[in-house]
Image 1 (cartoon, helix red, strand yellow):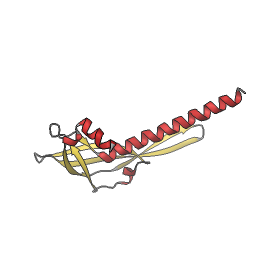
Image 2 (tube, helix red, strand yellow):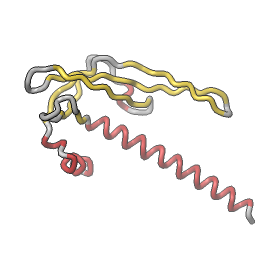
Image 3 (spheres, helix red, strand yellow):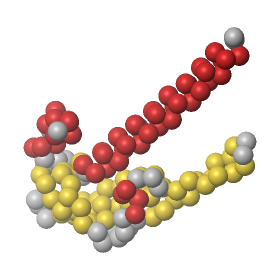
Image 4 (cartoon, one colour):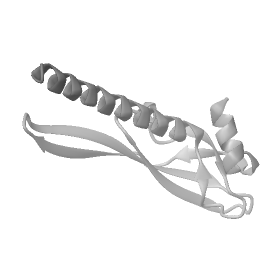
Amino acid sequence: MLIEIWERLRGYDKWIETEAEICRPDVEETIHHGRGGPTVSYSSVDELMWTDLNGERQYAMFSVPQESPLFQMAGGEKVTIRYNPKEPEAFYYRDLLRSRIRDVFRNTLILLAGCLVAWLFIWIRSR
């Protein structure tokens, strides 16, 4: 329900719905150096392709972390997107928005948990 409200507020509900194909998924590896040694995280960089009303192919890139359900997508899969009829290269992909909201929510919870632990540590030491 909230996502539909967001789509109406942003005007995405007036954009043209079409089927897009994931053309070229690619996995990127990032090495992070920390106290516990190096760790590796992965993200998927995907290219979408769709045809606009003028018959022209449009391409766009997006990236998701490995925790995203979209990370597992392979080339050739079809997804439903919306694109702006005035700017056919501008697209909206609902599942991508959901994935990003999930990431923000998860990271916020981790930050809040860390702050709580730090506060408890300070509170216990001050007693």
